[in-house]
Length: 156
Image (tube, rainbow, N blue to C red; front, side, top):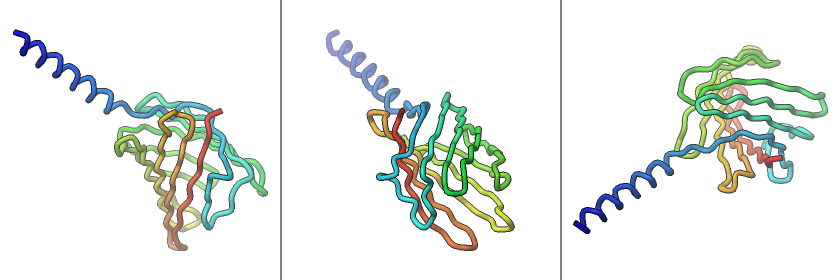
C-alpha cells in the first residue's frame, strides 16, 4: 500500500513539473531600451525606444515609440501567438507576421514590401528569469543585404 502511495505522489509531481515547464513567459509591461547593452549592427541606433506590451496569450499587443534624429515615431501592432498570420500597418506599409513559440522564446517572422524591396525580419524575444529584461534578437534580409541587431529592454 505504501508503494502505491509513493507512485501516485511521484506521478503527481511529474505532472506538476511538466505543467510548470510548459508555462510560457508573459512579456507584459512597459519596457525601455538600454542603449549600452543594445547593438543595432549596420542600422543607425535610435536615441531612445520604448515598448508597451500587453500579453494575454495568445494575444500580444505592442506599442513601440522610437526617437531618432528623424523625429518620434509610434507604431501599434497586434499579434496572436498561435501561428495565424497577422497583418499590421506602419509608416512603411503593411507587414504580415506569424508568431510561434520555440521553448521559452517567442519567434516573430515578418514579411513586408518596402518601396519595391521584399524584406523578411525574424525577431526572437526572450525574457530573463527575473522578468526584468527583455531581449529582442533580430535578423533582417532583403535584396539590398542582410543584418542582425539586438535590443535589450529593461522593465520600468
